[in-house]
Length: 183
Image (cartoon, rainbow, N blue to C red; front, top):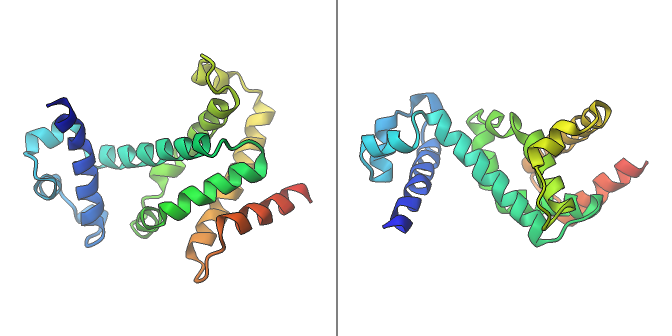
């Protein structure tokens, strides 16, 4: 029964994404999401009080998957991390394009720096028991400025890359950005 319960949020998330392929976000109602997910409205509201909560769940799901990709590829160093980044987005290009088309990228962008910093710390301190939130909070302001600046550039390059008719491979993107970075 517990396994069935864990599938409900995924079913709801998938339902909203399916509806987004056909309708604008503002025109989707919770009732439609419940119907698409084959759950009752009370069940839907128990998991997600609003559509925005479902979108935050989608963003969290994507960022958790990214962190797993970084750990799976044992990404260390700039070029390897960029390779993991573009490999991940290549695998999730439809979701990224759908969020962009629906003007919903802010669900990712709002938490991207904090999530990426946590992924970086998880990679650096793999297997160690560390307070990730505390480590992020303790970072010097100058390092945070640099981190946010660099991440914003990579994010905008990712969106540009996504729109290319003949998209470069993750390897090519990681090499291009590494050369820019080192210049």
